[in-house]
Length: 346
Image (cartoon, rainbow, N blue to C red; front, top):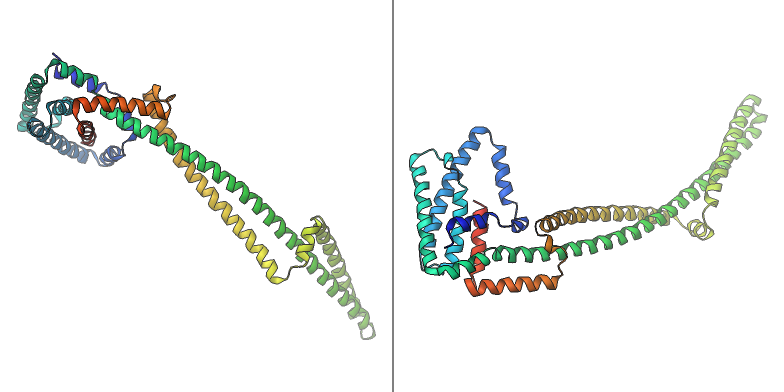
């Protein structure tokens, strides 16, 4: 006859791939415990141990009730609870009554299992052994396919964002080029005005000769210096402006004040759009990395899943589901897996 010990060992050797797809609730609880000091951790561990003992005792009462579910479902769920009880450390219990309750609970689990085993018979116990890991594997396969599809969706989104980034990069480059042409044009126009003013100052110096040669010389020299600087600036800005293509130069030369502002706004919007797309791409990359880590961990635990197509996964899932339905009934697999998830959070 298959014993409770054999089944708990089978449960202990189960692949834990389904845990890859669980929430971080267990990790969050562990982190909270680590954050506390030594005394608080000890008190927390004691409370959790007593709560677990109480919870396993409460679950046993439900599994002993013949009205709750079929013997097959109850026996399968009892094994998961028994595994949790087997891993329980009674040294964490301070009170003698708690230690006694732990020892009594072990005996009660064994007697309850023996009763269920007699009701099921050897053939049913063997069937339960064969289908033992089906419920969590059904769930894990479904989550694996879903994550694989999400991964493909994120990869497709990344390609779309990259394309938009490239388009935004081109738009930004065009806007920068247009803005640079505007700046060169405005510098050229400013240099022209500066040279004209300098020429005016130089001519003023010539007029002042009749009044004072010294003042005329000073103003004339200043005007000449300003004129030379203005001409040099005009030449440099003119060369920079001439480097742009003729179509762009004609477009910029025809602009008025509001047109110059529009060019500046276009550049700013292009740069903002570029930054927004880069942020979206980075967020998508992080999400994709997280999914890749989950999928990779699942494949590491279940290497046969990697080459499987969605159709092959569906066929395997259907096969396991039918086996569970025949033995546990329509809701059996769901009840068993829910029990397993709740135990993981204790």
